[in-house]
Length: 337
Ligand SMILES: NC(=O)C1=CN([C@@H]2O[C@H](COP(=O)(O)OP(=O)(O)OC[C@H]3O[C@@H](n4cnc5c(N)ncnc54)[C@H](O)[C@@H]3O)[C@@H](O)[C@H]2O)C=CC1
Ligand SMILES: O=C(OP(=O)(O)O)[C@H](O)COP(=O)(O)O
Image 1 (cartoon, rainbow, N blue to C red):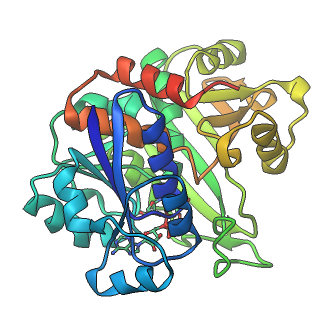
Image 2: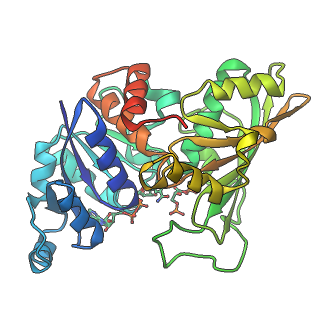
């Protein structure tokens, strides 16, 4: 059994913790939090050993009657692999903590690529993380783009990707985010950071990305154009994407017109928290004009990186190859809609 600790128990951390618990070959040795909020209380109710991420704040947990198992240093010492899911920039501050205990660590997409030995997407470059000490699971948007690029590159070759990312302003619980009533080019500079980030996974890929932010919390939406090298029809591309385990081609008859119905669909399917771990690609949008492929996909920012973190744990621990790990993760989570 692989012993896994999670430092930073927010949107991503709590989902990764639950996903680790679901795996047949992993044990969650604990989670670390800075403060005794509703998520900390739930962790304890779930039976997850809770560690204080900041020693000076440990007494706040006592005051809130929330039992602590210890300090984060003890968690790092006990874990075979740590998953750092703290806010952007904090992961970099935590790197020395993991090094002191000689514990390999995964970081999230908010950290810089040069913090780590390799950036990671299970479908595209699992093997690059074998035995690495520091690995970054790329962001939700980069994960969504990488899952699309990998099969297209293998099947046809790609001349260029152009992607416009309509980004949710914040997650549902992020009450301090916006915009509330605006449509923001974000970043205003072009290309956005997403293209270079995809190149941390596909160094030779030609890709330009543009970003916007809108008053929505549910999901991101990507408008994609891929200029392919090989001949393709829309039906062939659709079949290819349907054959991938983490791209869900939304059948037309479901009559799903946006992120709201997608979330409802996930809740009806019994998905935890209404999570959609897969890229959700509108079937009727898949079109080919000459060498150009076009499509729309929705990306559930809170959850698409979760199976990727689980796979990255096995990659650094070298306990499975890509296919074995992806299959185990998918089966344990209940992937498939
Ligand atoms: N929310 C999203 O849509 C996605 C986020 N990411 C990335 O995942 C990382 C985490 O993001 P979220 O889960 O959204 O953030 P979050 O704010 O929901 O959760 C972070 C948690 O870490 C805690 N924390 C803060 N300082 C800490 C410290 N020093 N030690 C331990 N815990 C600490 C916070 O209290 C919070 O519970 C970031 O790098 C972000 O860019 C990646 C993909 C999607
Ligand atoms: O990494 C993300 O988005 P990004 O790839 O658009 O930077 C996550 O959705 C978090 O984005 P945020 O920085 O808007 O919280």
